[in-house]
Amino acid sequence: MTIHIGAKPGEIAETVLMPGDPYRARWAAETFLTDARCVNEVRGMLGYTGTWNGHLVTIQGSGMGMPSLSIYANELIKEYNVQTLVRIGSCGGMQPQVGIRDIILAMTTSTLSTPSRGIFKELNFAPCADYGLLQAAAIAAREKGVKIHVGGIYSSDVFYDERPDLNDQMMRHGILGVEMEAAELYTLAARYGRRALAVLTVSDHLVTHEALPSEDRERSFGDMVEIALAAAFA
Ligand code: HPA
Image (tube, rainbow, N blue to C red; front, side):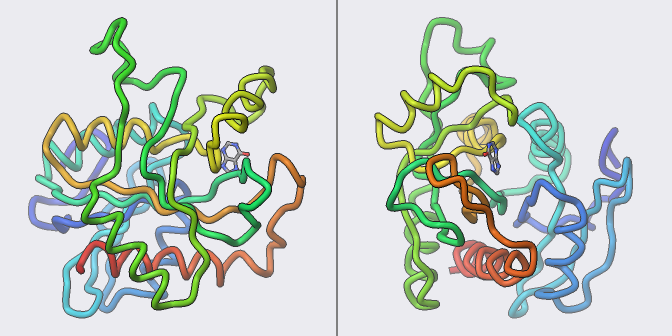
């Protein structure tokens, strides 16, 4: 047990999928895992462990934003010895060619700040995905016929952004989408020598202002979970 995770030693798998939303953790575990059981309920941040194609896997909510994800990822890495962490989440599209329902594989992620910022001082550290996971996710998406985009994203600290000029600069530099967690996940993975990837479904769009209708969400998010699982165990 840790401060924020109630699972006993051995109840968390070496591979963890991390949706922001704890209810999505429950949905993904009930939909895709065999013999899934709840291993964490502390603060309602649900976590489940089960098997997928015979592989032990945990799906643990991260909460929204980098400070929250950082708490769970730190405890998973340091206390439960988790080796592979795949964020599954939603993002806002930032390029015209990135459509609603498409999936973005975040090769690298720009930020203003992360909870790890203090370590780097004047250095602009460039958090990046594990290449093996990235490649395996791209292959899994192609096999499923799901449209993906691979490139840079932006991990923001704010959903309701009072600095739209920053989004303009991100778009001008080819950033594919915006979310709020991946940069800290990649930074922690780099620090502790673990594998990390963010697989993101485009749920809304900053250019076209479209949004994924609620009835479509389940199927689109399902593709993302299956791609994340296939990549983790490739
Ligand atoms: N901004 C930040 N995070 C997000 C967004 C967004 O538009 N959509 C989904 N996650």
